[in-house]
Image (cartoon, rainbow, N blue to C red; front, side, top):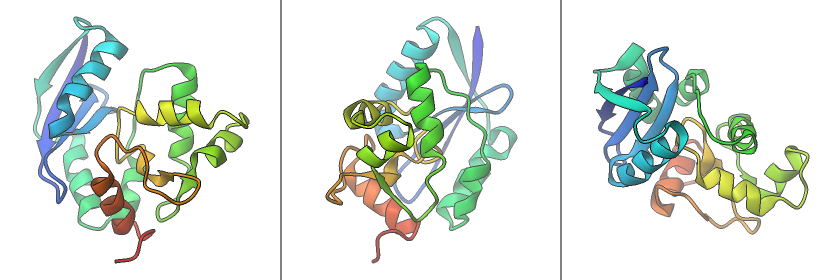
Length: 171
């Protein structure tokens, strides 16, 4: 059985769950009000009885590092290790999301092109929406072709805040 260590931190956008494995690789990062979605994804990825969640304050400093991100140390999220389940295509999309530089965005079609799958923008969007490690795997950096703030599971307001925080959107 997989043991997942969990902590919850306060952020300017609300409480945020941080869940990692015993090797301190992030498995889930999710807003508290969307914890049902997080539990659903954990069950899908690891099986309903395939994991246990254990409270752990600041596992390997991950909570502090995410606090640092919200306090302005934007580069810190690039250093955080992840270990996600999901399909090979989803993991490929999630890995590519991490290559989008802070302060920049990409639209779904560009992301599909970068993956060598032109025309797969919808599949990329679906994989993006299934990202279990929000903020760290920066799905908020993907926007609609026309510049619209589309499809962020944490809510468009949070997406806009994160992009403003990272310097893409001006105040």
